[in-house]
Image (cartoon, rainbow over all chains, first blue to last red):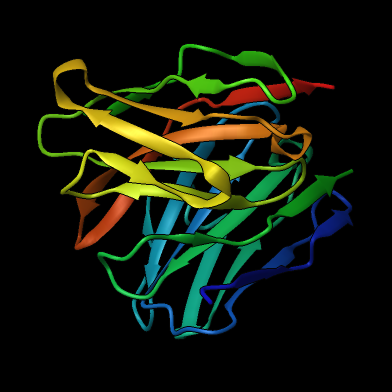
Length: 115
Length: 115
């Protein structure tokens, strides 16, 4: 149990376009979902935390207008990278937890390449 | 603020040899500690976690970790490494925030396994 999926696994887009990444908890209801960004050979950096039905809480330095997060249901959260630029190219990973004090279960990640 | 140090960027072992990956943390309260493994291009998989109780924690895939409060350490061990264990390993300390445990990750240790 506790499987998290992400779609798409890879996406290539042109500079200036917007990209939506989906994160789904397949076999449990996720009270809280998290979005991370990982640069090559580096650790994960938390971007934002979202609770179902509430606005996301963004970490310091993360532009909320650029990285739009929606957590409309207990099984789905989306991250939209608006007006993407090459510097937004990265590996984006989501995670989900069943309860606030539960372990986070991670998705397989989405590789975004902006040309 | 909390932090996690993984002093070894790379570790190389021969298949069948024992393994120890080091992790030191800095946190003012009782820590919640995690070890995750990441295969290339993949998300993170939880190996084990420590919340309380027995300081020697057993995880999946034959891994174990020992919490030593006096040394602020949570080293990961495996008695006999398999080639499939080659991956990136992340230690994390979970900090309570808004009712959730937000992991702060170390920079990771890359495990290379020689046949």
